[in-house]
Image 1 (cartoon, rainbow, N blue to C red):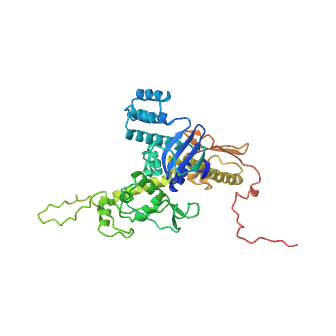
Image 2 (cartoon, rainbow, N blue to C red):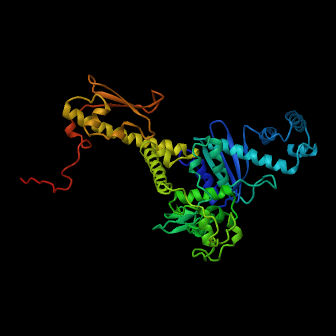
Image 3 (cartoon, helix red, strand yellow):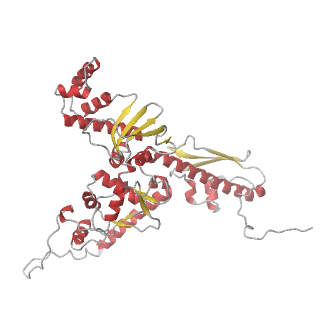
Amino acid sequence: MLFEGDLRRMALPQVIERVAYRNHTGILTIQGQEDIVAVSFLEGKIVAADALNQTVEDGLGQVLVDAGLVDATAFETAAAEHQGGSTGSLADLLMDKGLLNREQLLEGLRQQTYRMMLKLLSWRRGEFKFYGGDEVAYEEGMRPISVGELLIRSLEDLDDGRHRSAIPELQRPYDRQPVEEAIRVIGRDGEGDEDGVWVSQAESEFLALCDGNRSAAAIGKRLRLEPYEIQYVLFRLLRMNLLLRSATSDPLQQEAASALRSPTTVDEPVPEALFEEPIPPPQTLASPSSTLHRPTPGFEPWVPWVGRAVALVALVVFGALLLTQPTRLLLPFPWQESMREAAEHHLRESLYRKIDHAARAHAMVEGQLPETLERLVRSELLGASDRRDPSGRPLSYSHNQDEDHYTLAPLRDGAPLAGAEHLETIAGDFLLDQGLLPDETSDRSPLVLLD
């Protein structure tokens, strides 16, 4: 066994990435509350997924029937015959009966494996173990599923497209961003457990070709990466702040310009055939008799203002999201839900402590608890944004002056969010509370009394 752990501490995508980046071959078992699933990896890519409570035949039959490749009644008849003692696998029996061909079978198995992985990505609790080996059993000829394809495709199938904007644009060029730490490649420079910036081999090669001129699609095509793999590599590099979007407004025009000069960041020139669009021939000056297109008078001055207005709106929206829902912005993917919930929990606890200190300060000065959170904001003991929890939900505040306690709770659909309530009692000697007031003597020398 190479490694093991708990999904509450390491999310499943991180586990899959660890296997993929080290090109491991072996079996990953995940034991959840309702099922146990075994995922087979061949050189870091998924080639099979089997569940204890669902046979491969059941999953394959559902995929083939949903795709319209096999009639449901015909499949049930073949499955019953196979269970009755037919030799060989159910897949072989289906092909012998002419219900599907080899290519359809392999695609069905691939889709069945993908569906099983989608089910796994929704798990938030469970234990995992990875057992390494020299080979694993799988249907020969099936096209493996890369970690990039799995995680990028899952955005469309698990989240109703709410986070598709997080997927980088392939037609845009990107620039390398300088970093202070050394960039190391997993496998070549170590296993990635040491300090530093660690990338995969594909990410290292992709990063070396980014020069702000060619689009991500052109670079991925040169490296022979699938579109899903390009998007995932690009997402990872952007998340690690190793890349930034190029300021070029027209990617195709910039690529055409880059073809006219030798690239400075690669060892050899890029063939023209790798560009997505053919490079247009240079245009000649029009003759005096030619009709020239002139812009409508009064239109050009408005163009810069339109661009500025769009940029301003985008900046305002980004700022609003950063202030109201920072965890949703920084951890947008559905498989990051457990990490997002943990981050929101810690931020909420920090906010509760801040409100508690403000309420205690108000009680010390006024002799009673504040009537509302607005009172603390007007007293400048809290900021306006402190009236919402880290997920953007408004906070309800209720107090009891007789018993000197108050209750905080985020509201969802007008009702307190279960499990997120906070009850605090204001009692004791405030002057002995070292966390309430700042220590104004921290920089002074201590006073020593001598007898």
